[in-house]
Image 1 (spheres, rainbow, N blue to C red):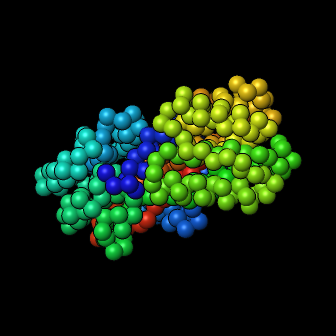
Image 2 (cartoon, rainbow, N blue to C red):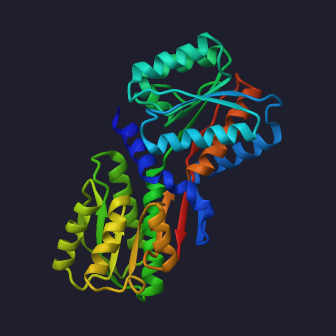
Image 3 (cartoon, rainbow, N blue to C red):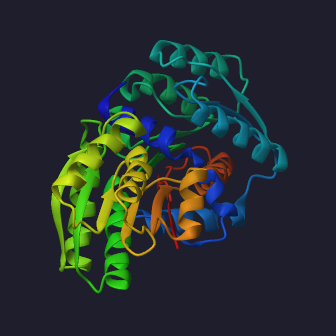
Length: 339
């Protein structure tokens, strides 16, 4: 799996519980990056105006069905498709690009689907099979951007859906700045924990979140930057150690989902009242949502995969009505929940 695809996979695994965000009673907002917002809006409007009159047979192909995130997304797709009159079929790829290629070719050559949504293991490897699909009038929604597949721009009958890590990071930083200004009179000493994956997405989240905090709350100072570990327990030890070195810290910001709750645990264990300081991060898990509701977490930012699924289904119907027309670049919406 390429680094960009791996980062999307990890983001989906960490944030798929964002599906529950729509049921949360906390204050929330949903957004995309400015560049993608108009594309998503026009796509949604187009879908509502010109949805295909006939149901679609949709093939959904994630990297694996063995990860709960993707299994949950497949189940959600099946239910949403059924409600819309569509039939959704899924397949297990086991993180094997050759299996994804074989599955797509089978669907196409046997005429089993009208539309395909694929989250690739290796984007460039499956590109020829996607082109074969669109050549047969089967529309495609592919995770990522055209360049990931070696395409020079948007293709006929093919749309793309990407995660905007810069907008995601900015959302975290903006939320932290809002908390500092509201709870701490604009001043805070902050410990930051970034994602543990060494990828461009990590750099984007780190840079954007820290820049947004500096811009929105100039009186906040990041006194230590950490790289999150792979599990909550290890993160908590790491953050507790940093807190010992910065005992007056009253702010914690995380670009990593596990580190978010680990930070709350570490600050609480240090005797700090989490409802009076600022702890903000990445997430959407039930325990995080519960902590936001009580004010212990000021807020969390997550990719809104429920909204993304809806816009993707709409886009497949829009393309199916005009399968030779150029597709669209979509962006996964971002959901913010705060106390």
